Structure formats: structure tokens, C-alpha cells
Image 1 (cartoon, rainbow, N blue to C red):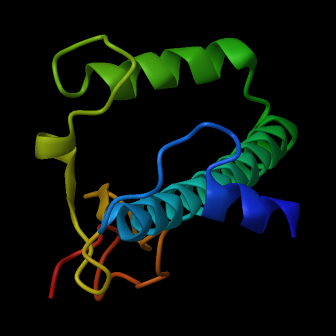
Image 2 (cartoon, rainbow, N blue to C red):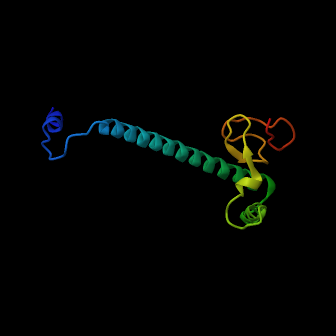
Image 3 (spheres, rainbow, N blue to C red):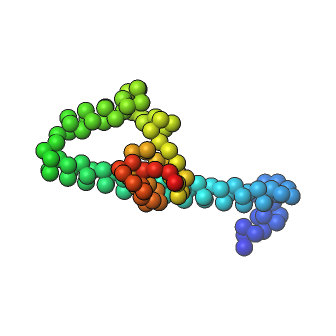
Length: 128
């Protein structure tokens, strides 16, 4: 109740909201909430991807006798595929849009990691 009185009678010294200001504050608050939710979703995806990657690497090491040095060499080889050793995969040359969800994925993917859409033929993901 005191907050309502503060707002009505400007007890905290703030100026009263101007027309449209309250609406803009609501829009900004909603955008911030949406961005916060998206950040939480991305953090969860990152943690799941990190877990799956670690599990797959442990499986490869156990089943195939690969070493951490082998992994480092393969990572460097993949990184150099676009001609630059920069810790990134060139999105233009090695990525495409998924035919179902339109998110960027590797051309070599057999399944879209976002929506699960499978390649129609072969090992590479193909747009329909």
C-alpha cells in the first residue's frame, strides 16, 4: 500500500510517469525477461552439449584407444578445413540452413542438432 502511495504522491522524489512511459517500461521488462529466459535455455544447451561431448570422447578413447593428443590433432585438422587456424568453423563454407527449422548447421551433419531432422540420403545433411 505504501508503494501505491509513493507512486501516487511522488513521495520518493521521482517524477510521475509520462504517457507511454509505463507501456515502454513494460515492453522493456518483457524483453529483458525474454532475453533472460533465452540465456538460461542457451546455458542448459551448452551444459548438455558439454556433457555429451565429454561422454562421446570417453567412449571413443575406451573403444578405439585414442588419446587426448589424437583429439587435439583432429580438432586442428577440422579447424584448418576453412584455411584458418582460428578456433572456429567457417559458417559460410561448412554450414547451411536446416530444411525444417532453418537454423545453421554443419553441412556434414547427419541430423540437425536443433530439431532432429535427419538427412534424406548418405551421411551428409541435405536440404530438401
